[in-house]
Length: 295
Ligand SMILES: CC(C)(COP(=O)(O)OP(=O)(O)OC[C@H]1O[C@@H](n2cnc3c(N)ncnc32)[C@H](O)[C@@H]1OP(=O)(O)O)[C@@H](O)C(=O)NCCC(=O)NCCS
Image (tube, rainbow, N blue to C red; front, top):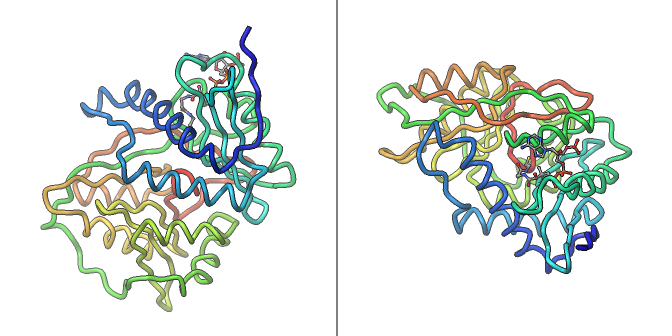
């Protein structure tokens, strides 16, 4: 009989955790997206490296929020969570295909939730996997469907965006203020991996402030602003930087953020449905596009 051991994650578990999460998420992508677009890929090397850097970071800030499961000495699952200003955030949750549906995820999620026991609010980006959805709802999270905007930006339609500038570490206080207003908790130390991995653009006008971290393909991977007008300008600035001829993806758009759907439609992107924003004791942040693991 196989023995399951759930224990705190360690630094030397990071490569195995990266492998487990890549394989588990790829399995969900294959099941979910095959009908919408043809070729979901296993996490590419650059994103794999980013994932490992973010995981080392959360192991440093929240060692008691990070757990692994072993079966007969093999690492088969993990849950990674962080607490930011009384907000509990689940960053990764995966069990290797072949070991799923046997109660291992329940134990891992329970351990991560214990880390957030003093928190009023919680948030996580749920995949469409029915096992994950079941776990989150049973843990008391409300499920808000997310849209995904995807396609090539029609460059003839790009508007002129004024007074959006490149950002830097000196903007952290401004960004933390915007986050407290939109999602109720600052990102604090999480700006370190974000600044290392993405381009930052900032808008700080008398009429509104906000920021967006932007991926190489022009995707706004995290965007927050004090009003919709500022958020709209930041999203245009981000997607305008997508390489001509390449596609852009804007993930994690909740129905509450219709301003983002409107920008996507104006740029002639396609709208798809993709997983859920799962929240406890809070409503979907607005205007806000959350990051998949740093939320
Ligand atoms: C989500 C995940 C981590 C859960 O781990 P797990 O070990 O499978 O979880 P458990 O076995 O503890 O719980 C799964 C639940 O789903 C149920 N289940 C199993 N197969 C199912 C299916 N095909 N459809 C619906 N429910 C299913 C199980 O009965 C169980 O519910 P119950 O305890 O109320 O009976 C794991 O399935 C996984 O890695 N999925 C792919 C990656 C993913 O989507 N991760 C979440 C990212 S947000």
